[in-house]
Amino acid sequence: MTKSRVATSSRVRIGLGLLSLVLLGGLILNRPVPVLQEYDQPFYITVAYDLYRWGVFSNGIVADSESDADTDSNTRPPPGMFFGPVYPVLVYAAMKLDPRFAAAVRCSVEADRDNRDYSACDRYVLPMRLLNAFLLSIAVVALASAAEIIFARRWIFVLTGAIALGALACEALIFSFVMTEATIFSLYSGFALVNLLAWKSGRLRYFLLAGLLLGLLCLTKPSFLVMFPLALGLSALYLYWLAKPRPACVLRYLVLFSLAFAIPVGGWATRNLAAVGKFGLTEEYGSAALIERFAYDDMTAREFLQAFPYCTPGIGELAFRNGDSMHRFVYSTKGSFFQVGRDRRDALTNTYHRLDPLIGGIVRDEMRARWWRYLLVSVPLVWCGMWPGWLVSLLAVPLFAGACIRSIRKREPLFLLYTLPTLVNLALDGLVGNTATRYNLILIGPYAIGAASLLAPWLETGNWPQSFHRFSLRSAGAAAEQDVT
Image (cartoon, rainbow, N blue to C red; front, top):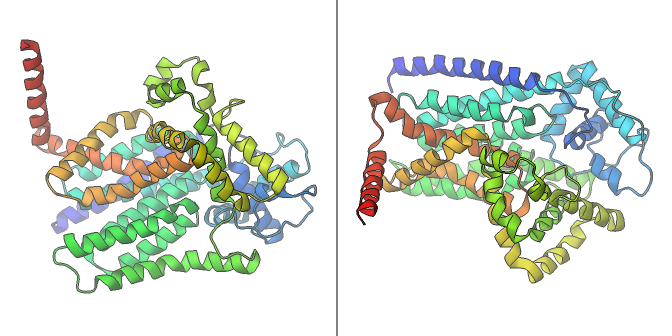
């Protein structure tokens, strides 16, 4: 890459970041501000409130629901480890910086704990919305930069940024809440970019930074722990067999990556041992998710089949306007799969207080009786979760699939290695999660890069890539043969 091209890319990066910040910030700020007790916001603001008022990192409303005694705003909570510390600490920092936001959080949490009306509390979340927009703008630039590393084409940076920005704009509503989605998307996009830089350059600082970012990601959402062995395996695969020339000390890179990962993760686990008495990142988190997921195993054959058109962007909105036949897929509907699972979880918590000692027996009973339903139902759940970005994903997914096929045919695996962790996360969400696309927002990166990689040659030359020509010729030939028959 020439110096002029690097300079141009630097200016474009700054422009793309500013454009993303303005566009996404405007869309997020334009959303109505809900009460802070809506959706999953109470999970994080309650932990931040306890940290702000008592200096205790608690389990928030999870601890409130587990307690036999009445919990009020004047009761010092015990330390907890259900949630990762990254996002509650960000909320806590915003409370320290903005007194009005601190007052809004304090009013909402105290009203909830004291059983008062919280609808009158100030609906003010400006600092968190601005933070979300800022984090997303960084992520867009990271995705576009990753695309440039993988494919090194003239238009790839701009196209990837535009597609990713369009997909994120469609998800502006979820980013308007005080929740983890923007933080997770930004941390993962940064980790994926730095990991690519580590592979391509072989520089120790990139391996260290990649491990640190992955550790922070796991402290935002513990399920990302599955990424650590996967990242190690992919790094070993690339460095040993694909890197040219192969680095002399591959093991050293992997060890340094692991040590950097262990700094935040090990630090938090040690804190939990000292404060809670358990060495680990979380408790009850996985058990609660699995219990809620098992409710979906009651899905009927009709719901199974209808889930595919229902969850497809655009088609679902047109084909299921009344939504009656698929009401159990709607999060807020009484009797929905999610509500049934949440009610069972709450009932077990109220009776036994702890889920971790029970989950082994619950899993054995479920697998013994309905293991085949569990695996089968995971298929439509994966389908429903694979469409972050709404209509943008409907256009990008076929191009993404074409990019994957092309990478296999041309034996250019870097894009596949970049994509694989997001697909593993998608499969994991189908096994332990629900139909919400917000858990798979990290798919937007591979979708945007894959789509841009097929569109960029067309913009450069005015012609579609040869793989598309071959596909078109085969399709036309098959159609002609069928007409003759």
